[in-house]
Image 1 (spheres, rainbow, N blue to C red):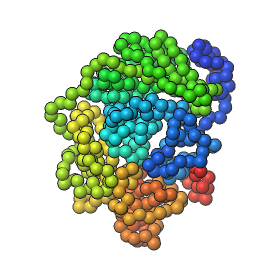
Image 2: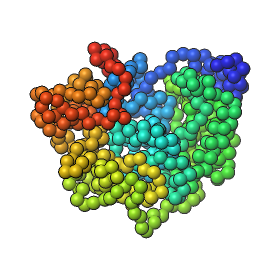
Image 3: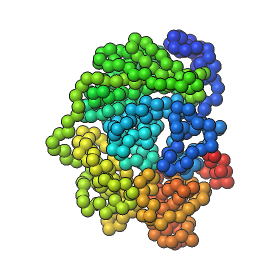
Image 4: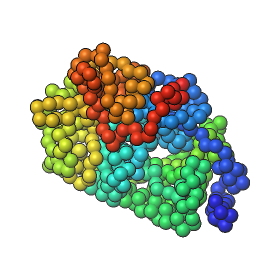
Length: 459
């Protein structure tokens, strides 16, 4: 960062922390961390992220693209500081919750929240940028939970759900100061003008979704930046104008998380020279007033939902969980979704652009039925649905690279590939080769040296 810009940055955070210590920390190598999907893999013998039960630090950063378990949703690569979200959601989730993650892509906080929510909960994950919404959809399909809906909308488009959500997550677009150690572009794009612009946009997003929050609901506001303008100043102005209050979070001293208060705003700050993670700030806002949501008497599916039909229920045998409805989308794919939220799914589909909802099961192609690749990733997939075959590391990577496979010893027909006891996908074995239906848009694009794959395994 050029000296004049560096001085402006220092001035903007001078009241927040020890500037010189922070700058020195930003020159050091960043820490890599992951969060596991406990319904797919067991604990790892690695140092744990202290504020997240499923978070682990890695000694070095492997090429995750070459790890089949990464593609199968067995773990998610997430910055450790942002895993602090667990400390707010877990004690709040004492009953089924309706959750909106309004700036959700690529899916880190959404995949963190889903396992923490009690049975009967619903999570709507939204992303305004279409290309990022597709990435969000891919990551949620791989994570394997059916009680989620992915939308591609502006935050203000959810105004029809007044008082519906118990919990709203706003990981707001910001100037990215917390990413300086990680991303060179974040440094070059930083400016005081961009900080001002971001703070205005952040406040607008809060106003756009506030009416969607139920009385006594909580809104978690977070950024990956250091300055007060995008953190305490945004929060203090918002709570003052909306008769809301900030909630305190219980901290452990050894975490070295910094609690700050300013004009009624309470923030929890992660500074790289104090905590083992990147820059991050989080505030918890409680809403006291407002009205509960009332579902319209009549709701009809629209958008990407083509139909619900009882005849589809035969495909429920592919799953182990009960109380799921089956619907088709306009691409002739059948999806599984919680029965109790059928009406709200119809209501959302009539107002929002739904990218996907629930778990994909099969694709109907004339008289043929092909298992959908997303079914293999579901945490409720019935492992007896298709014959299973264990494959080695190279074969699994070749599958995710969408290369043709050869499985001469396996039976013919649809097979469920297993790698290290994790379901990774389906192939159709026709004898001399196995057809690989893995989607091209999800496939590994990089060149692969298959002789060095083991270097990317996570112990």
